[in-house]
Image 1 (cartoon, rainbow, N blue to C red):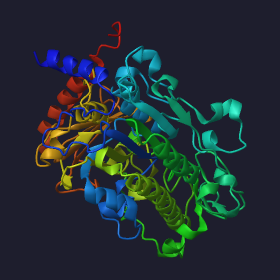
Image 2: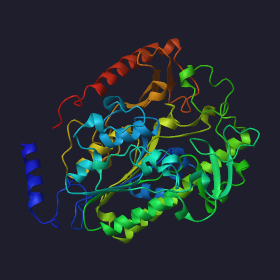
Image 3: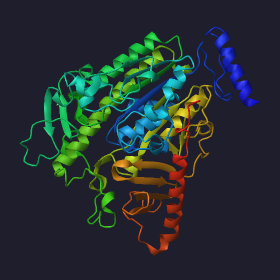
Image 4: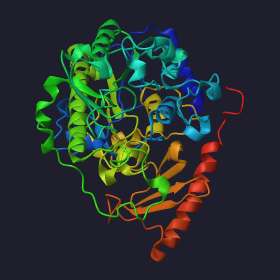
Length: 500
């Protein structure tokens, strides 16, 4: 009967003029006061650790615009990505499936396995929304895919692994990246300082000449502002993908002074023998050692990263300012997140891929009109966004989706929706189950490449691997069984069946 009334409401909405009020499935919320349904503004940063945001406790890198969004929304302190690098994570977010369900363990689009099933934005498009993306939502290469004047044939003009049918329109923002005019230095693999500023997935800092609009993220903010103006009178799902702070760490010079001199940056605690109790697979692919970064270069990397975050935060502010100027805040749900976290020297690790909290955890803020601001400590996953936003906007929530509807947490942040968060690092054949107290990591599905167990209450920085502790073998056996069950559940999906 409930399903019958749901479909009846959709039919009614199609018959009335667009200006009539549409139910949004949340009676406790303030319904939109304009004539449209809730809009969705999805803002996603690239390679952003929550630890770099002042609303998550950073006292050096100030992010006033993201902080302002957090002050009006629900800030999740334990949100986890489903893949610890761009391709698997973004495919999971947009498809509503875990990486091992779609087989997207690298940088492909999930469409071949998804078939005719609707992606997240496509589901809204199919229900009368204008849907658009600006820059990186699905995977695209950075810096190569957003390089102005680059090899557009190779990089597909910046579309990368994008999904064309998910959008009414799509827009790319090509900038100079590491070729920007300014004071630049390659920090990685350059111990003698003779290497020029280079491209690729390399630690490079450029204090760039010119203003925000010279760069990809400045252009992305400007296009997002333009689209808000153009589509203010119709329901929209707008994806705004900022590529910073992904390397290269390039930002206009004006964002650097708070982090100068670079020698003032404080590196994370490091302990002698930190790697001695972890399996080889647990040592990240980028470390201070293999990147040949001395302390000066490490500190400059942190300062360059923070400047890129500050630049990105300013672009978020431009988009939010326009949303307010247009009076759209009262009927627009805003989400801010990142595709995964990032190491900034913890354990001598850098960048993504690892399954430690710095890499697997992400910032997540959801602001819903009429909802009281809150901080939520429940474990949540980015795969939850698709079903949650469909629910919030009164659309059908496809039962096939593997995420959970976390909208009850917006009403009551003390609730929980899951006992553990699940994430994968296909590059390392690694799997994470993160509970409240325990973080369990295993390498290979049979754990033959090693395991890690951390007591997050006693050891929140994850320095002591308890895998060999006699007192914790029962916990480890429980997790091994839970991991096998989770992997089976992930693969038990409808993707091998005809689409609905």
